[in-house]
Length: 414
Ligand SMILES: Cc1cc2nc3c(=O)[nH]c(=O)nc-3n(C[C@H](O)[C@H](O)[C@H](O)COP(=O)(O)OP(=O)(O)OC[C@H]3O[C@@H](n4cnc5c(N)ncnc54)[C@H](O)[C@@H]3O)c2cc1C
Image (cartoon, rainbow, N blue to C red):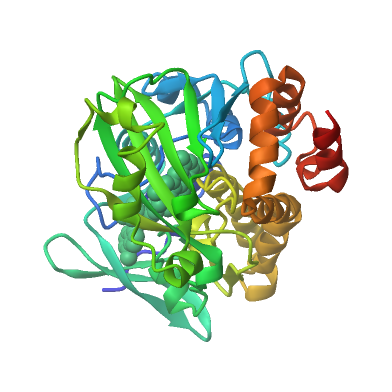
């Protein structure tokens, strides 16, 4: 029997896939949404939501419900390799999202992915004609060079087809859709590897997320993100090429960092709730092709993570919104060919390209110990410098400022 045809098949029910399914359902499309996991499921992540993620979740009317699940934070703490740290207050600021034009409050939240993804998936499932969990996509269906659907195996081991003129590959960093279309690109210069471990009992967890640029993984960082209920999401990560070149072992690096000052006292009575778990972050310091005949890649499958901060959820949601806009236009025109869907890739990079390039330049600068020391030590002492950096986080001041030699000259003279 030939499978029924949908408008779109969404592969992956993480943030990108669920939000794509939601936008598609609201646009009146017939959606099939599948994920190999059963929800609630965990996803290795820092759990912090950027202003961009918040603005899209607000647009979908889901933010209030999701924010209630997490811990709101009002500060970002940046730690220098020396151990000195600067607190950048966000309270009272409005964050301008340059991609969506929205202005959500800069107070943002950490929401554990187990909860966030489950809620998003349940909302998406309600609007989808077909939704399957425990359903692993194994290959794509092709017709005359164009993707026409997917073949997967369900929880009982039975093979099933789902057909649609457009497949949205939202299946994460190791995307099967990207592999099958020849677009998976795990270039170690453009992939971060990171570990996460939940702890309880870490001292001095307050209203800030903490990013500490420890020498052990430079130019990467060690983080402590409060996620509510006295729990901390703790992790460490760096570029895969750096990890390989320096022969770094991330689990050992993390053990070392928590066992020495300034963290040892804070972790002395803490208990790890799980072994450290790792995952990859394909970052957008490289433009990877993300569309072709009958398909588009979203979120981590397209490699859209911020290369400096490691935030990927906001761009995953934004790519989902753009992909659905393009899908609606393509279906209306009756043309889902490669050149029609290439407008998705163009729009993604038109909007996010400059921001990703600036982040990559900042990451390069942060690789220099002296630069980090200069900025963080000055910010630790000067309210004016804190305000400047807060403005850049909120986008009321251009982030390019951080890449300008004039900025460093002023800091030196201040
Ligand atoms: C250690 C770490 C810390 C991070 N910290 C942050 C942070 O604090 N803030 C932030 O914004 N970002 C962070 N990120 C990045 C963020 O986790 C990702 O950018 C985000 O999860 C991307 O969402 P996605 O929907 O594209 O992919 P995913 O969340 O990976 O979802 C992909 C989904 O596809 C499903 N799937 C995969 N293969 C198949 C298949 N063959 N068939 C069916 N289903 C399949 C999976 O089960 C999964 O549910 C971090 C990442 C890591 C690794």
